[in-house]
Image 1: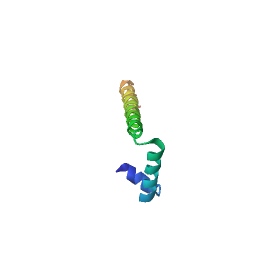
Image 2: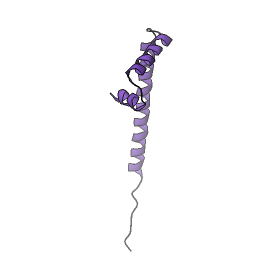
Image 3: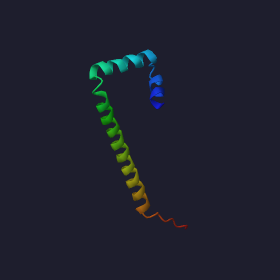
Image 4: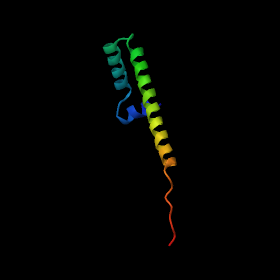
Length: 73
């Protein structure tokens, strides 16, 4: 659903999406598309994993840093 809203935001209608899909099918062929999608899925999975690791490292470093103490003078 997210992809549809992104394409609609870009001003692409049904005909344009159909033409792009047809071009991809003709350019890569029906046998190559599943392989491309698998590679895309793996790339997205690795990206999400990397961002999760970075987020965990940042949260851990925040927890490890001692809280600054304020003195009331």
